[in-house]
Structures are given as C-alpha cells and as structure tokens.
Length: 330
Image (tube, rainbow, N blue to C red; front, top):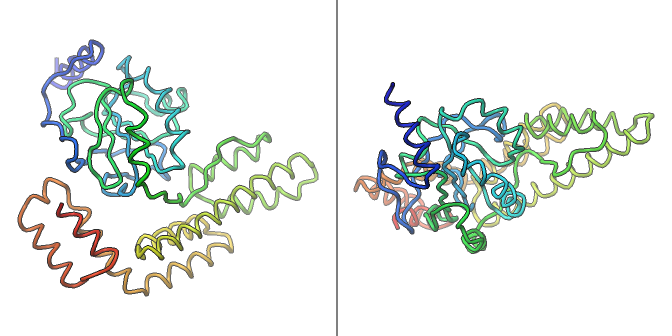
C-alpha cells in the first residue's frame, strides 16, 4: 500500500469514528489569523477562479474540511446548503475544502446540488491541524478564527455575530435564485451564472424578449429585470467602496463587470468607471497594499514584514489603506 492510501484510509476510519490523527500542523487558536487552506482547483466560482483567505477579507468564511468518502461530512451538506441560502447575501462565504481522495467531484456536486464553493488541494486540512472530518472553522471579517468544531455542534450565533461586521460585496456575475420556467431562458441564466458572460446572455435575452411566444417573451423580460436589479446593486457597491476609500476595490469590481459585459454596450459604462477610478491616487495605494495583504500570516511574523508595512505607511500616512495596513500588524 502507498503512504497516501494509508493516510486516506486512516482518515476515513477516524472520520467515521469521530476521532483524528496528528499528521498536520497545530490548529490555529481562536483569535489568531486564519492560514491559507491550500486550494488549487475550484468549483462554483466564476470560470473556476481561485479563492484565498486574503481575498475574502470583509466576509465571514465558513471553511469546511470534508471528503466525499466521509459519511458525517456528507450528512452535513444539507445544513451547509441551508446556511448558504440563508446568509450568502449577508456576507457569508462557505468553502468546502477536500483533496484528491474525493473522486468524481463534479458529478457529486451536481447530485447533491451544492451551491457553495468547493476547493481541492494537495491535502484536506494539514495547514489547520485537522485531525478528523468534518471540521469547520469560522473566520471573521478581519481574517481571524472565531470558532471551530463539528458543523453539527456549531451555534448559529457563530455566524450571525461576525456577520454584523461583514462587508457585503456584489458579485461581478448575477445569480438566479430560481431558474426560469421556460427552459431556453433558464439555459441562458445558467450560462451567465457559470461562464460570467453577461453581455452575450443579455443580448440573447433581449432578442428573446420580443419572441412571438408570449410565455417565452415574458420569461426573458423577467430575467432581464433581475439582471437590471443586479446591475443597480453593482453600481451602488462601486460607489460605496469609493466613498469608504477602497478605490482599488471599486476599480477592480468595475473592471470585472466590464469584462463580463463584453459584447454589449453596457460594457462601456463600466470601462469608463474603471478608467476614471484607476487615475485616482487611491488606486495606486490600494494596488500596493494588496501586495502586503497577500503575504501569508506565517510570513508576517518575520521582522522584515513590519518594516515593509512601516515603509508603506511612510508613503501613505493616512486613509483607508493606511488603516488596513496598520491592522496587518495586530
């Protein structure tokens, strides 16, 4: 037997029995910065894009270490889906992280109708010292661990309390809570949500909205109204980010939405907004701050990191990014 197989077999036994084994680092303490979980492949993200802990600052993250072969893990999925549906719009991001021992994941996700992010890495939870599955970590908007344990034992307040400090950001791609009743309209909704090609989808829907079949036309018009409402939310979010001082975040959101609208006239609106924001001095500060924020929590213990932050603060003494940089030292 290979060592990998033995580890997977041991983890399976321990997961089913409710115990664990020490193959990983020590688990991060409550109140400590949350380590990166090591995802390399992702499902349920736009175009399979990568997600990291540093990219989720401002959100509440429920990080679930699980596997398809773990009975208790699978049994917890309906509850996680319920939490996703209840709190996703309020700033909760659920990530189910596993490794290659979870086979045929794409079909598994479809069968279980999992809407939240699924991440796959070289191991399930070594970076967090996970000893048994499932194990959940709640990470607050400041990027620190606020709760850990079995998902079935997690009080809902472990989510609702940190959500009070969450910053809700609009996705650069609209989602549709309920698929359209007309199949060809529902198919376009699915393409928009999964591929991020909003512009192409809107063009097809606009054409379909004048269809001779009244039911088809009405369905297409209803979906266009949903996309229009999403667009209003995006513009409001861009303005909020700009007002709070996060010019970089505002510009990046506008750029992402412009890219999703390629092929449609509405792309010009967001491209103009992004171009204007990138000329703002705050954009350069934000871009430089991202380099600091991307440094892993372990590396921040190095004295050289503090010097890097000090250098940043000399250049940008005050403002949104100065406050964010100071928080990195805490």
